Length: 427
Image (cartoon, rainbow, N blue to C red; front, side, top):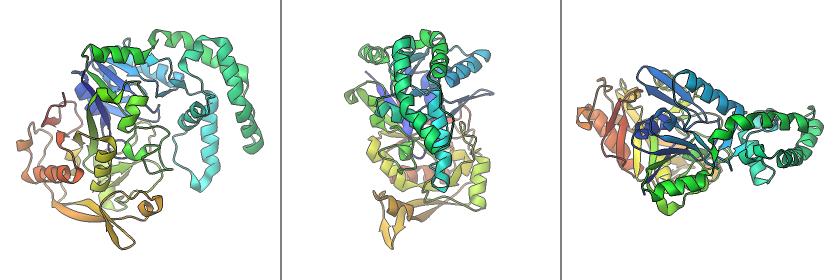
């Protein structure tokens, strides 16, 4: 009954797509359990690069069944466009399964997201404007539209009416926008029903049966730990739970069935959107990390904020997720620095703090305390084993492992599928 959770241990964009794809050939199911098309994975296969936004990365692995779980919010137009793009490139997408309980991102969710963020002005959160937050809000407020609702026009119409009762008041009276017609929304949503029908099923039953049959199931989180709605840097977070607990609620698989939890760590730190970021760099080092690392959001297209590795948030991720392993990515990006600072603690109001402060105000004012490690200049992209890395690169990895609180079981030394050093098997 091997069930693994793979998630981001920082603010997202750590390279989860590559890690999932590497495991995809060894697992039977890859499950997205939260988020929507506000997350993005880049997977490089040979000379081909694939940008995935909503689909599980396992869709690129023949023999693996990709699953969109009940905890995901689905924009049908984005999903169908992504499927079409992969089909045109010769990728078989016929095995995709979608939970009938997953919620639909409606056109009015997207509208509300954009106008609300614009209205906030300088207090904006940094949302992608794709309707993710309002869709999760509808889910909690029990006026959401689920995938299964597309197959009962009467129920769908009633639910859209209920949702638009309040939203049209908001749009017209507060934001001075035109009201959205119920019939127009219903017609658009019904237009997706036939196209999505071959994929829709009871994924909770299917996944539990798969585990009982000793199939290997990999649960893939979007975003990262520090963007978790409960455990992240609130309010600058996403609207779901990318942490390990979200894998259970977002898939319907119980926690006793999870055998391993793998955190993806970038060898430095990045963040997209607003919010505190203690190790952020505003100098030429930050620009170099951005340029060499290709730090531009797959989904947002925005430049990522860059900074040195933060061991405090790595330790936090280990604790709140119960991490058993780390996959360290983009070690090659640090090649060429003579000295590499690593944040080992924070200074807050003159105090040294070694664990993530629970207070939002304290974290906002946290200043990084650095230890400096020796860098390396040798090309590491051809290394196939840990011993083939330069001594200073080995020391850097060992230091990060000790500071972070869980073993580093794999290291990414380049963007390619085969540019990975596996120290301990995840399976």
